[in-house]
Length: 470
Image (cartoon, rainbow, N blue to C red; front, side, top):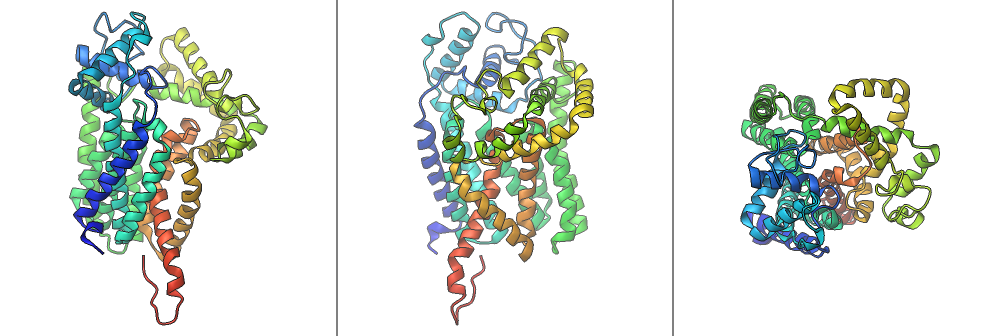
């Protein structure tokens, strides 16, 4: 192979290629206002950071932060709002647009006077995704020791991410989440393979940043410890002492970051914890899906299948029997859940004191419905990359079966956290694929391995030729 296709040069070429392709796809999307979708959460927090130097609860505050300083908050975790605030410091034009948008949202000006400009954030998203692609491809190379797998995996990951370019054009956390998770997964695989404490420490740091971007990833800490201890049984080279030392090395930076955030909340907000109200709000919104009808249960499978759903149903306007799966339609699961959340907040003020009783009642009466409904929600969430996933997912399943037969335990360990998050999001969140974009890494890795094995299979059956190992 040429020097451009392996070693440090390969990393640089893939990084540049991913930046070019994904940047073109993201920047080609029409400019949007900053108050669409979930953008106001992060834009308002960035505004409060820029103007008042306070990490607030964003739109969930009792006062107008354009006129007075808000109270510190802990509804959201800090990393992405800090990133948006940093971009505001670098690009004064973007900062002006953020200020205009927040002031318009507070009723102080006409939103039409605000310029639709978010190019610097889209560039940042492009760079984050390109870094994530490099991490995914590097993970594939570590697992299989093959530069062809590196390139195939990188190309497949770029294709899947480009198909999701629309979501990356919003000022939201998806690109940062994908990048941090991919780095965490790479360092975790390196740690499992080598047993070196520095990789465990790097994984703990990456996981800490990931949890401070989206708190649901906290479940990966105990899962990672469990998988690390499992390595002793399924990876012959793993040594018990090294794995235990690695767990300790991972725990230190992760604990320091979580503890630091909790102490900040104790000092600034007056509550020792990682968040407030957010988990309760998400669960209440999720419980709305438990009223899914039998017809909706079965129709969810074709509805959420890329390509088939667009042909058989109205997935844009929700004018048919699956209208409750389209979030913006009246009476949708999304709106029913959010209306119930707003009603409880209006009546009681806070959700956290209520959530224990709400969960207890829901599980006593509808636990079986909750579990059953999670099945179609998981199905809907397992298609990141849209139609590209129709190609990747079957190959990924074949790769997992092949890894089981041939003892590639490292691939299975690598895939486990992303699959666990798919199940978690089905249990506590909703059916949107944007929560499961981290599956693109395992999908692309498994698919690349299978494709290269299939491409060499005919030659391996010819007399006199040894079967190539991919």
